[in-house]
Each structure stands twice: as C-alpha cells, then as structure tokens.
Length: 150
Image (cartoon, rainbow, N blue to C red; front, top):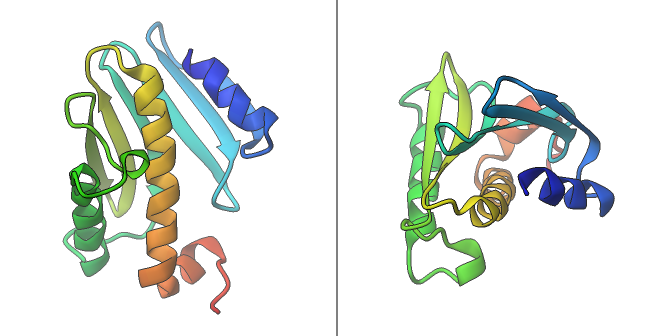
C-alpha cells in the first residue's frame, strides 16, 4: 500500500527519480527527488511501525534555535485548531524528530495499522516543514538547499 501510494506521487510528477530498495525483511527504503536538490530517503519499517525521512535536514546543531523551532512547529501539528489536512491525529500517528551529529530525521510512528494515513501525513509534514523553514529560516535554506533569497 505504501509503495503504491508513493508511486502515485511519482506518477503525478511530485516525486522524480523514484527508486525502491529492500533494506531487510521488514524495511524498505524509497528515494526520490523532492523539495531539495539531493535525494530524499523515506524508510518504512513495518516491524517498528515507523516511517522516517532519514537525514532530511543537514546542519541543524543540537539545542540550536532552529532545532527548537522545528520541534515547536512539529508539536503544533497536533493542535485541534489546525485544519484536519494539516493536523496529525495522535491516536493514529506520533511525530518524532531525531538529531544525530547535526543531521535531523523526521519520523512518524504508525499506530493501529494506519499506514495510508501516516504516509499522507509524513509527506505533508515534510512539505510544511520546508515551507516553514523557507518563511522563518531563509538563511538556513539558502546555505543548505540552494534556495533563493527573495
């Protein structure tokens, strides 16, 4: 199901250069061009019930202002005041971000076999995060993703 939905994004031209690689019995790694000039890697692990955009954001120092802002932004995605398409239902998925040596990964823990729901949500989360960073941390986006300052 996840594979088919990701292929739909690719067929619509949202993702380019879509590739899939089996990374174990319960892990599949999908990679494609989207949002950045470098490949994005989405790892789906059914044993852990997780979806992770691995190494999505480089050069995010631990405990930095930008990391604190990202964590605040992600926490706000649970807010009932957000429109449903922008909100994450905590009963269906749990947002997490990890920072390893200044490289941030974005994850969604799938609850109750809600893979379709969580796939849509993690794609939307990543997109909204990049929009947010472009709006509030344009220097970061220019330095790390060749974004134009305007």
